[in-house]
Image 1 (cartoon, rainbow, N blue to C red):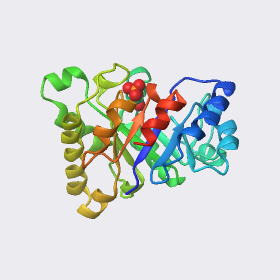
Image 2 (image 1 turned 90 degrees about the vertical axis):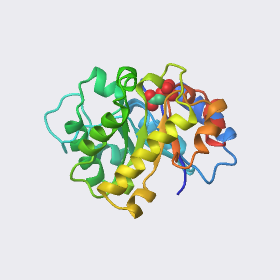
Image 3 (image 1 turned 135 degrees about the vertical axis):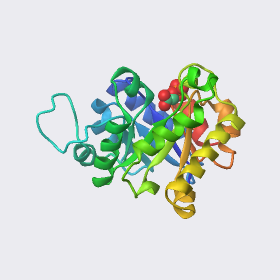
Length: 246
Ligand code: PGA
């Protein structure tokens, strides 16, 4: 299984900044042919990035979408629109969407179904808050999020699961490799129970939360960590390139 390293640019970069990132980034990823590299950019950059990434092996992704196909949903974009512009991936259920835009597991489930129907690969984010971790609720929260978000979905090997402990996002506090591995292993076991061993082994479970060049190698060497979802460190071509190359 090829590792997946995805950049989550969040609400950052204009066209000029994206152009200079890509020019720079291409020089930093010479030895990364065994890694699938995805850049999940704001909607406003997708068309420019599609042009810039033409003939490269860097893949385009978005950060959100609506589950409906089309219609009166002001301000929204659909899975088919993302596919049309050249996206192969879409981040769904990011904790910032859950927190600031009230996204629920039920809504995320509808979005995952719509994405898969349009041949877009979802990167499904799940993860616990610090309070939940302190109250020993982590496994319960992960199980609830995973099973509700994946309800009725049997094509799970096209979904990448991103374990992103909320207390580690943008805080500089990374889960230790063994803390992360424990949860990734738990997610793998859940997938085996819900689906089967074969599907579970083919599904990528990636880690997100303050992944940086200096901690990526150790995290990515854990047996159940199949890649990373990188926020802050993906905004800089050199540091994202280093993560892709570990
Ligand atoms: P971070 O963000 O790497 O800045 O912690 C990760 C994410 O939110 O996906």
